[in-house]
Image 1 (cartoon, protein in one colour):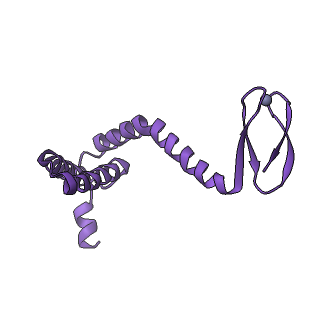
Image 2: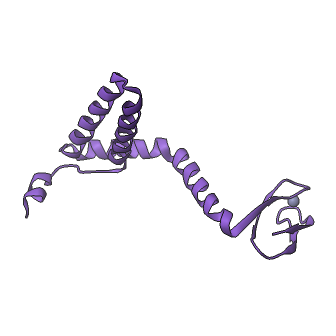
Image 3: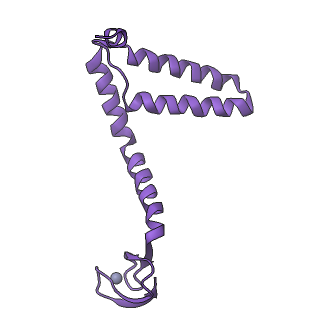
Length: 130
Ligand SMILES: [Zn+2]
C-alpha cells in the first residue's frame, strides 16, 4: 500500500458533489479576479475547505447520502444540459422541423435535398429542404 492509499484508507474520497464544488470555487475565483468582491474570496475558500474536509471524512455513509441528495436535486438541470449538448451535436447532422398541423418536433438527417416528411404523430405530410 503506498502512502496515498494509506492516507485515504477508510476515508470517503471524491464524488460528483466534490467536483461541482471545485468548479464553483474556480468560477468564484474567476469572478473575484475581475470584481475583487471579498465575500466571493471567502466563500471560495470556505467551499474548498469544506470540499477537502468531505474527501477526508470517515463518515462515508453520511457523505454518500449528501452526494445522492445533490445528484437528485441537480437531476433536472443535468438532464437539461445534456439534452442541450446532444442537441448542439445534432445540428451538424440533423435538421429540426415542426409539424405544421400538430407542432410535433421532427428530426430529419441533413443533406438529403427536398424530402417529404410524414409526421409520426398525426401522419400529416409536408415537404422540406434538408
Ligand atoms: Zn403532426
